[in-house]
Image 1: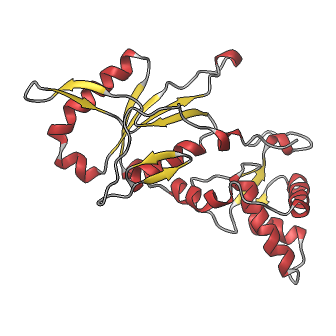
Image 2: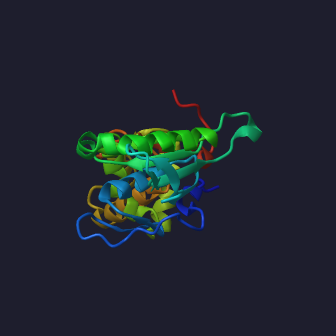
Image 3: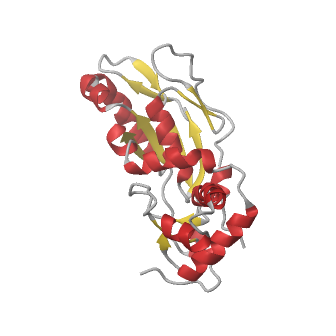
Amino acid sequence: MRASISWLLNVGTPEAARRIPINTISLTGKLLGKEFESSLERDLILLTAWQDELDWFQVQPVKILFQDTDRRTRSYTPDLLVSFINHSAVGRSTRKPLLCEVKYQKDLKLNWSTLKPKFKAARAYANERGWQFRIFTEKQIRTGLLQNIQFLWSYRFAPHHPGHRERLIRMLDDLEETSISGLLEACYLPENRVGRGESLWTLWCLIAQKSILCDLSLPLSMETCIWLHPTLQKLPRVRK
């Protein structure tokens, strides 16, 4: 049985509240069919799309009316709305939808007096709907986890070698836990450079697709400890 990779298929709601204009100052583009207007926003989408509990997400999701410091009515559109899988049927608590704003720390500090009314309105809007509102800066986004996801992202849909896949999975099931280099050494002789190269590619694909697991909050290396997703284990084990 293959481990679930439904996280790869998650998409947002059909329409955004605001289209992102072409910008000659900051980086704009698309990721997973959704527009972003800065590299920091793109990085938050990467982190969001990686989460197992993700149900769907939408960029530029809602337009919120508020009064600025001069009591004039303005509108504000947060960057992202994230919805999580409902676990209530199985007795697990479900995370509230998350309304997100992305800002660099220096911009927050420089423009706080202007931004504060927007954020106050967004928090009230979210609370009324049972959501949470959160501001993300590079401190929360650009972490070691993001670096690992950026490395693995190109492997998420990449073709791999079926023969190597089955060998790696069988051996890792026998070993229970080992390092990346330890798994390759257990499967292939040192002189088999082609086999090791193809299997390493396949191994990155398996990690990117979450068939093989590891602690991605730590730097990825050949000494990273890895183990099988429980659905691929012959005899499921409880990790200590």
